[in-house]
Length: 202
Image 1 (cartoon, one colour):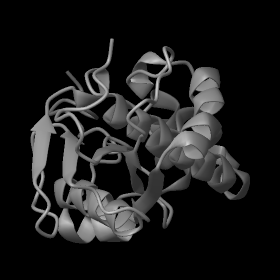
Image 2 (cartoon, rainbow, N blue to C red):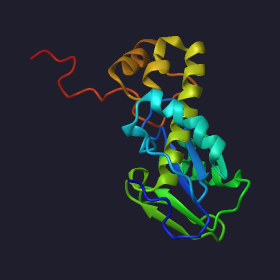
Image 3 (cartoon, rainbow, N blue to C red):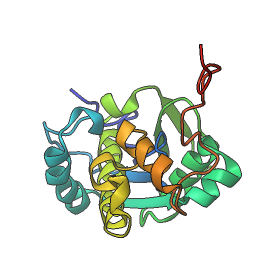
Image 4 (cartoon, one colour):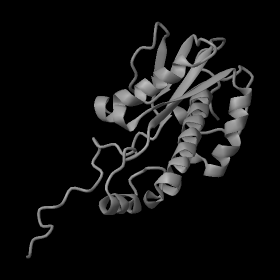
């Protein structure tokens, strides 16, 4: 069972990101402040849920949260500052948009940079431990997936509606055939490195 808070009585914002390992699309982060009495047995780390479950939970979280926000960092920004900094920047942007100022920030993972003067705690696998981080993981994932489905309409050859920009064999094959788009992260290894013997007769 997920913990509802780290410190009782404190207004805590859970933060998580989605799309960090993708070859295309933005990295997306969410910040969520839940009411102290919020309870939902289905909420868990978004990776442990089906797409249908995530989509069912999204409106519940958005309706019942004290405050929530989602923010994105573009592939161009990722290429400029690297994916770790971009992930943290996306979380900071989400926190910027909250209508309620948190008294503490709970972050999934082990890396973060200070946000204003608000104390923060990094929690490895926090999306499977803290309710607010799990809720943030669901919002980050569903909002990013929605965008990738929209981008798929303009670039159907890459299969983004299905692979969401992750490095699947079909996605890499499409990059090899059609090249990269403005939505790809050009600082990432989009295609596998050829081995020493590729193209050589043995």
